[in-house]
Image (cartoon, rainbow, N blue to C red; front, side, top):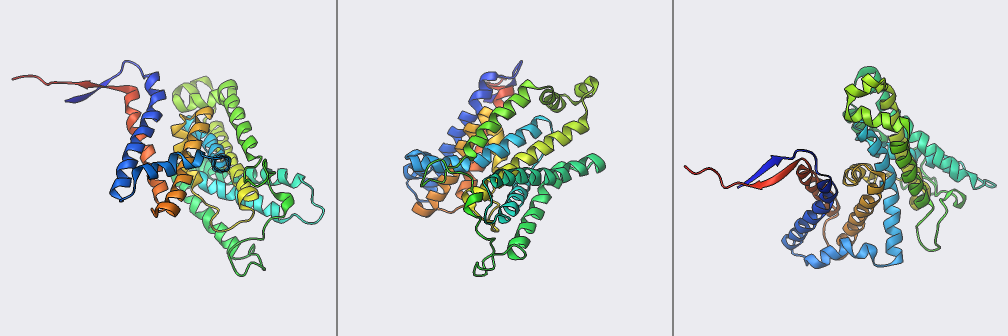
Length: 355
């Protein structure tokens, strides 16, 4: 029989191998699902793991989807390392898109390219303001940041719907719930003509470097991590738990808001009720698969982007339901949680005692 035996100390090897093993388990279960659905499993896996990589266009689309996931997951990693459970990054992402979109709608004749920077700054401020509500309620009233941040996602969605169905609706949009199309001057600069890939890639990579330096090379980053790992030690060292709470949530909200502004002024080009794309929730998986490390988050975001694109291709080419993307995301998370058990435990074979 199998028995779990506690390791003397956590295994660094399994900490690295666990995401790889989780991906392998996800693939195996995915093959079984394709068979049960009556589809060729090889074609199904091709949609998820080959098509998103087969050409320059496919790689550009992969990067477009990875940028918001990287930015949001970076912010969430700061929260989770600080033992602050922000589950509402999706709402902060939506507020960032709304704030950036409002600035974009102010563009007129003679507006310079400086407005792109203003859009991104507005997005950061919008995301930070929404996360600030969570921090305030936790700080002043000890409200659960899990529940508050999650509920604010639905408030953000309703606020977006109100605006695009009402005050911000394009009067020339044939009554569709959407804003005006943003002027070309407001668009994030594209890197290659004919592709959607834009300068957001460089913003994401810069954020990765900045977050690595902040978390592992600054006093404030060290204080946040100590507060998350050992709250009693942090208090003894004189680190402020209130400061850590506010800093973690504001950084997380700002990163999510920046992602929203990049999407609004980039691939979307306007605001619609479909701005919420689930990136805020998928980024939770990205953060954990990437081990809450900025470099690991880049690779896990690319993997999650493959799931998004693969799900869309499986829907259009194989006739599979759109929910398959969420199924793969959920499988990866549950497999990772299961495999993480092996970091602290090892499997032993036991024959049992004889009578």
